[in-house]
Image 1 (cartoon, rainbow, N blue to C red):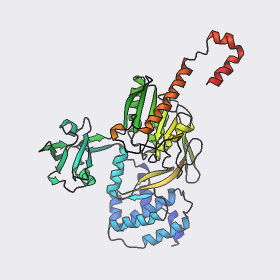
Image 2 (cartoon, helix red, strand yellow; image 1 turned 180 degrees about the horizontal axis):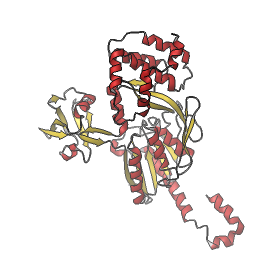
Image 3 (cartoon, rainbow, N blue to C red; image 1 turned 30 degrees about the vertical axis):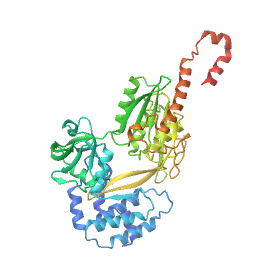
Image 4 (cartoon, rainbow, N blue to C red; image 1 turned 45 degrees about the vertical axis):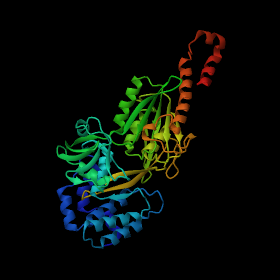
Length: 451
């Protein structure tokens, strides 16, 4: 059979799997019995072919090096080989994807794929603790328990050390292995050996569903008597938009005068989450446009339901990427606020996450996005309105978003200027009879220039 005709004929497997593939979400992905049986019969080659088919059909080439004829030859070369186990097949897939010259189209084995789903879903099943590895002592130390979780209710405290997990010593254990042992099925129990103030003791905790908080906030008082709503988004997961909505409503109730939105070192996340959060600040206008394979363009706009119109500053840095850049670009191009910090990362490509027939996964570049002004920021990033370097000496986590944080300090100063200007506009009374008498017909022109 001529190899050039093969890709155009999707085999029976893909006819059955295509609906499953397109319907998958980050929550509750199951691999069908049919798919499992197919993997056993076809000796891992179906996974390789599955990846090949997705790339052939949906991949958007941003480098200009992708040639379909070469990709067809690559398929034959990889399917002609024999693979003794899944690791060999997975290595072959990774080798195949390297030929695309796209760092964002990548393969994830079942464990890696499951972890990515957890990270983006905004929830996990565990006990609700954050841990860190002390490099000097080699101890696993609890940063803090999350309020309302099993760990919090059991009295676990910050700086507690974990000596063992289910009687397995943590000596020499890395964080990833510790997390795997602590997480598990909802309702099951995990036993932690805790060391505190010279004594060790055990705590048995039942695992439950834990929501991962992606939005934090506080109110900062200024010398001018203004209340500043400081909001930090750590990642754009499935819960971020809801958390942001609740945060803004709370800060509006507390009468803040303006906002500093901190997107520094935020690597991005879900496209839809960035759009919904942008709409909470931008009432009308384009948020982002995406350009997919074949030139298909989709435009997302504000929906007229912005939660606040108060002055806004956005903090960005070299670690602000993807969804963070969508929000930043939308705010700046719509003249909704100013950006402060350093040039952003420059990731203007959109990936779709696909479940493969054996439970592994593929993130494939399917589109690129443009800012409202039509700017392609991929590899270029967004230069802020006001460039400010971070403190030369690293500041502690508790000092981020305070006046000891140089980038925040500059953003707050600029925000106060915008607040004072908006207060002048608000207090200006265009129906004043005195002004009408003085300026007459020229009055409206004066108002226009003032604004």
